[in-house]
Length: 164
Image 1 (cartoon, rainbow, N blue to C red):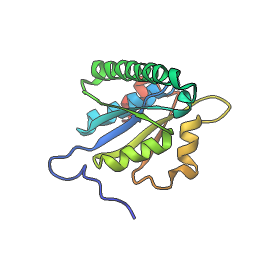
Image 2 (tube, helix red, strand yellow; image 1 turned 135 degrees about the vertical axis):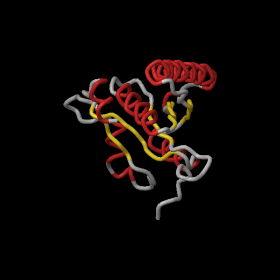
Image 3 (cartoon, helix red, strand yellow; image 1 turned 120 degrees about the vertical axis):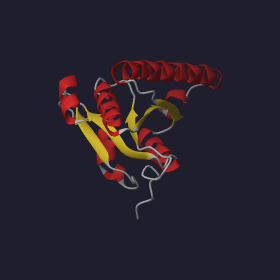
Image 4 (cartoon, helix red, strand yellow; image 1 turned 90 degrees about the vertical axis):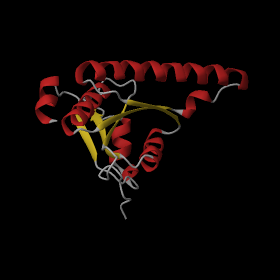
């Protein structure tokens, strides 16, 4: 059963969700999502997920590591948001979560009923499309109530402009 999305109701805008991480292809997902939001009058949500395994250290070090991870996440989101503002004039919503990426994406989609499309970018390495795309396109898609768009990492800005 598909949960009702609010993005089509009065007073709501369709939101495109893109995940920001340390992969080179995430920039392509953000570029595509921001362009789609611009051309459709939608909004953009940028999500950074801090993996919990980063904090399984000694108790005294955990707080420092968590603060550093949050600072890294904020810096990555700020950098992506600056590019979005410069290219499209859109002010994205920035979200930081801590947990397993596909689960945190799922939770955010459930919580924000205006999110209508998840945009990811596939890596271009021989190992495959990347861990996030692999986890979401496999059995991890169970429970996603919205379409997932996977953008090839080799798309140029001109390609994105033409497609989005």
